[in-house]
Length: 318
Image (cartoon, rainbow, N blue to C red; front, side, top):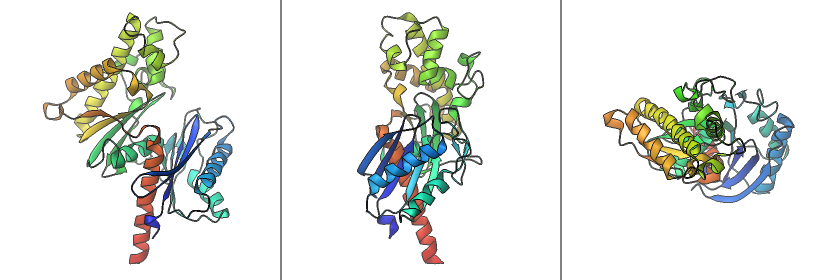
């Protein structure tokens, strides 16, 4: 049964490609990472992913390959839209490109591709902070800002693959500030790692500070850093509160590098979320993610294993 074979999870990001061989209990059997040739075009990115998959798999049989990748990924596994982070990424057929090359190596199995935050959410909902919960809202706060709604282990993809794009809702704190998508005034422009630094500079902060980590270390000695971090966290918290009212999840899981910004960031975020929530949703837990950098690999593999099992079941019933 392919459903009991290990599954490959792939996480294609702007700086690195992670590949893991995952067993049916969500454990990493083997893992390898390689730099993403982000400026060399889609074929170079897919080639790096394929090579890493081969290195991790070796001669072992696998049940499926799951891929989480940056950008809006349509249901067939094609990149519908993407920022300039990965050169030439928009329009890429991820599933077709990976499947063709793997077949030439004698690996013929289902290949699935989803947005990287959707994959992260599936990992946390299945094996991490949201394990055992029916409905999980994941918020990924890194260089950018994304989200995913996971229902019974499956991400809500949406008609165009764009479900969960929390970073691109309007935000009063972001008026006049540019977002990575090219629009002005989106939440990502103040609440992501890049956005937090941008807000700090906008408020007159030290231009030499270039990362959220550096900024968070200055909050006790730099009043502008304190203000920027507080406003950024509160803006995100208010948006999370709105989403809690809409989705009514069992819990909210926060992942990404900015979630390490310290206790003040968490306090301001939770206060703003509670102030925005309805009375009945005020106590919805907001918790840190558990799987760290491997969440995307584990989640992509988990989704692929589930789809492979469903396909096998259908074949047996036909």
